[in-house]
Image (tube, rainbow, N blue to C red; front, side, top):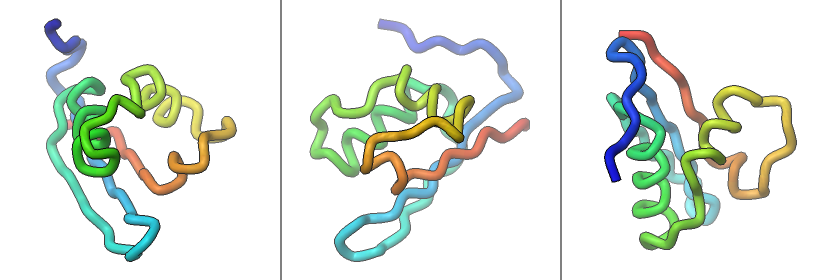
Length: 81
């Protein structure tokens, strides 16, 4: 499956907080939502497909909607290059 790439001038930044140790990890220059959801799944859910591209899309575009409890640990910023 090929990841969708709509615009070349948009990338994402992720700031994630570990709930047990309060350690903050930052990831920069993420190109698309599939890559972003894969980073979250690999680093925080041991590779299990917990977070989908659609879930990440909703977190970015609808920040006022209620999230699942673990969604509050991830802050995603859309950055124009």
